[in-house]
Length: 149
Image (cartoon, rainbow, N blue to C red; front, side, top):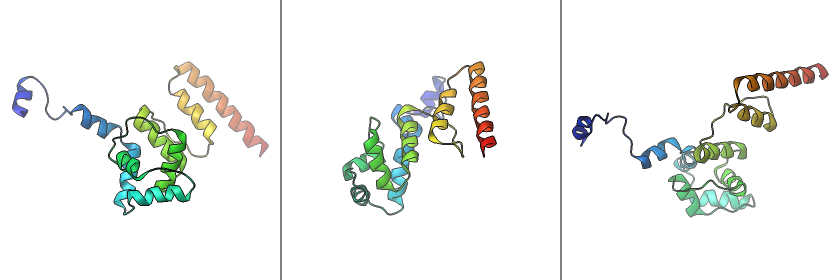
């Protein structure tokens, strides 16, 4: 089969079936769940952890999530339950879900609150002059805050 692909001008090393490409490219939250399971925590224990936090998530859902067989992004309450189930901060779980289902990518900045991260993520889609203007406003706000301290 590889020889046939080469004859048709396709590089067999770069051809990845769509299903496998999806699993490789969109797997951040699923990978997190698998890592917790690989560390010795069963899917039932994950479900029990969420229940102990007053949240609900089923063992079968956690198994589907680990296998990357969940086709739609979980809603916020379910993301909170997943965070409790795997013992990770909700912000980290939400970010992994955004990457997995929305192809969202952002650089994590330390020392800022969530509002600033939202602004920075929004800047990624702006034109260069708009980014410069927003950056100047953010830097001015930081200077003003530093002066108040």
